[in-house]
Length: 229
Image 1 (tube, rainbow, N blue to C red):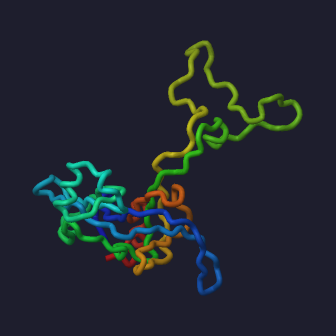
Image 2: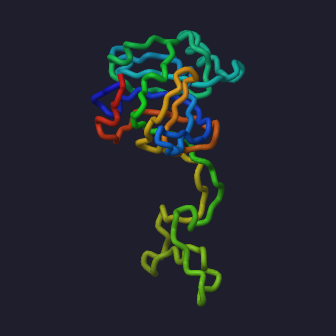
Image 3: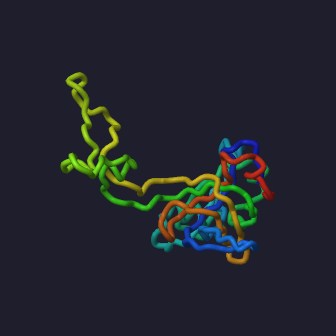
């Protein structure tokens, strides 16, 4: 898929299966993250005429019928699609939107081996964390002359003027559990039979966490569209 606008990128929703390694013909070990992107189904096709812009609304996963609200159930029934665990919209060009109908599945073939992608997920929550660890600060020396100040942030306030702590000061608090995107990950292998993507490197989130895979927005043009349709 090639688009002129970086914001118009058709992607896939998926699930982080876990990490493994694969070997090249030369015997090199490559760490990869396995992403399950099976059964991505279109729940709505938006057009410039009806909605003011072109987009594909996509769902992934499964959800019990008892967990689906009546308005959403009617929306999905109209599209002829089964309710999913996650629902997301991808802005695309009018030509790409015209290729799909409600209820259709988006194949893993929208990506190609060697293509660079951005993977978005929710990072693993670490709970309440100290200032040093949370913001990756350097601790004070642990040698002679330092008393009970090895891993503390130090002074946080100002002089008598202004005499207060400015909002946004980096201090202790919750670490992780935020939406994070890892950019420019290389697709090493695609398993079309099982609808799996194997991308080189780590992906945000824990195992079985939901992810969003899009063509890389900051990649060089040749790498981002290599082998894409």
